[in-house]
Image 1: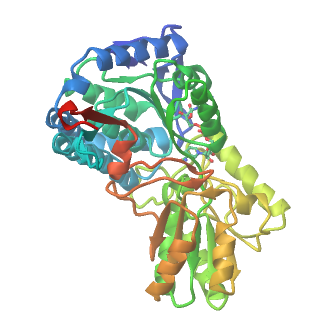
Image 2 (image 1 turned 30 degrees about the vertical axis):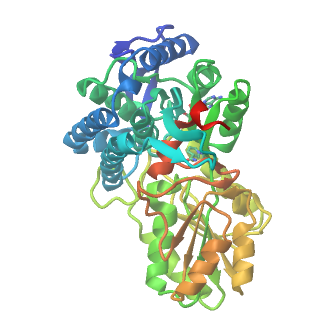
Image 3 (image 1 turned 45 degrees about the vertical axis):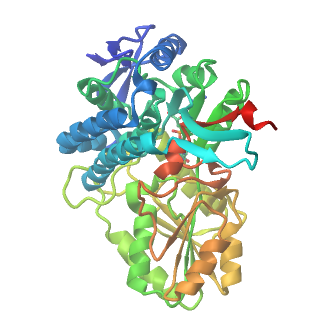
Length: 486
Ligand code: TXE
């Protein structure tokens, strides 16, 4: 059986009758056949979303009514928590406890935007003082229209929620294209939306590859807004496609985020956050702190402790208990990371640990936790996103040098600083050119706080009220009173 597209409230086969198969990265075995969408399927989905926006009830419902649907979706996700987490493990490879956080956060994201939708009724008009008695003016918020979303494979269901929940809360309708590498939880989301009895066409899900299904979505003239998370080259292509119609876009792209550790930091805390910052989700995290900068006097001991702990990580299939590092998502990503490790060695960096497949695992796309030191600043592995369990560690001698090294990047998604001196932490946090800064930790992510990058890490902010704003237009309404004469 092939999983079909969800278009206009119905399950529809691919127009081409073609399908593709998803692979379990731990076993390298097929899991499920899924409809391979193309421009015809995308066009049907966009038409359904257009009809639902222009003529359907969704944008005309009150925020409270839309919020009630979003709460229903959250409840249905919560009811299937363990099953959805297992599905994510099978499709993506991540350890089960991490998959469970993702699904809990997915439900949390729908709840959060349900609450924002409910507040929209009170907040949707702002009076503007023009200083002219003859004129009164107000600003109102309206949904952008039909939104397209293209998402990656590293947090499959959560990335869907980060786009679907605020778009629906705002009153937009949407066409979502999940990554062809991990489409299964997006299909489960379609089942949930159907069960929640969302009006037809409000959320449409088309599965398929980037060039076959993603590109026609980004190029479609009836899509008013594109939201994308993924690589810089694909993001840049989507921006060019959107440029033809001057489409509203938001992009969340890659990173090469620094973690700066000053010598007064507790060494065990530092090791814990470095490990989490780079080995969580096998390092396939856009905000992963993949460049670690350590003050010279702490550097030797810290490197020794970090290496000891990295060697101890339990690697294996995500459903096995105690596993902290699963396989990479697919063969392509495995090859990319292995090539990066080889390239790093060729560039003169010193491989301190890892760098290969774990000996005891004979199938699956596993890569050992890998640490590089003595990494040249202009090398590929210091500058480019590897998106795997590979960290580069370097020492620094002054706060100024740490900030300069940290900012020497074309990316600016995240950064972190650890020190007992909180004034210094604040200073460094302000000096780092990135959209997300953690102090004395790395990676904790909250739906209430803005998420997005500086420089080539993207455009716009997701999450919080910033995320809702992505899907809203602002309209000025100004009226003249002839009695008052101007
Ligand atoms: O990304 P793509 P890939 C980085 C990471 C990784 C690299 C490549 O470094 O190694 O990107 O991963 C769709 N028109 N990130 O190839 O291509 C595609 O189908 C329209 C960082 O998976 O960016 C998928 O749904 N859409 C990142 C989505 O884009 C297209 C997360 C992402 O795929 C398209 C993932 C096209 N021409 C990878 N081509 C992060 N920032 O979190 C592809 N797509």
